[in-house]
Image (tube, rainbow, N blue to C red):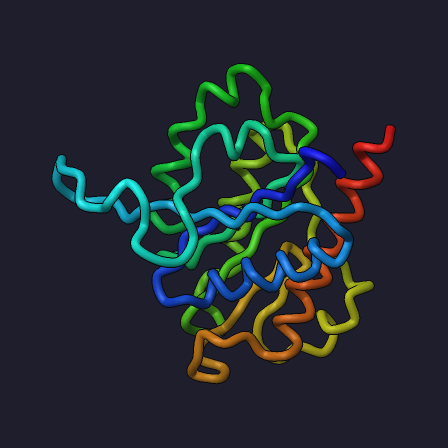
Length: 199
């Protein structure tokens, strides 16, 4: 699929959300879909640039062009008191021009998150991310119960999208169920992008 790619855009402070992002990429890449994994810089409480333009390691920062040209979007954030983290919101708040021009309309999307505790606000954070997508007219894909690991997980994983519960294994490492839910959700959006772009 030339020029078609899934943009996996996330912010991760401790590594859990980053691990979900890469699990989603694993699933999408199994279907020969190109993947771009991008992050956003931290924000400062004062008016100064505190982050380098290019990160010293790991994923590079997302540009508006990455978003404009994607064939699908996977959007992830840790929970912050039941909402997305401010660095991601800061970036998303800058996309009003894309909203005004309907640029992301009919683009398929999925969301993912991580919390420190079992009831740390996963679903409401995912709804925050989904609300952004709905305002842009995107096509929402969740993690359906045909993903059998969703029925078996004792930690992360919701029908709204992949997730991780850090307190379950006291680690940012995904459990086998969490990994499979993320990977299969990545596979699902990749297959949808392929079919959607075939017409």
